[in-house]
Length: 80
Image 1 (tube, one colour):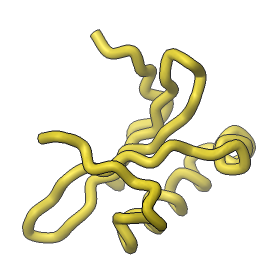
Image 2: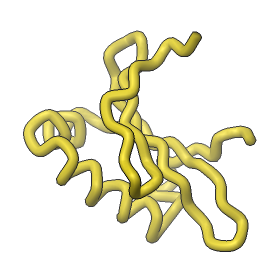
Image 3: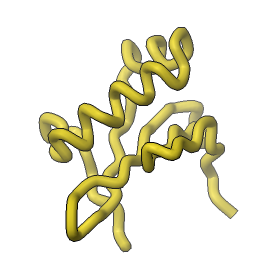
């Protein structure tokens, strides 16, 4: 059983999670021929934006991560 709650599951191949500590993160499927998942922990400003805008904010953030998977060094590749 996971310690995380899925807040949003999108057909755009991402999901927003809330950890046991209440912190939010986004997992995004990235890549072309070879696909993998990365996770980015939302900072305070991003968390507020998600709470305010919901799916619209998450869609924009997921698209930004898909376009640049390292996401400024903030993403972590998830084990397969």
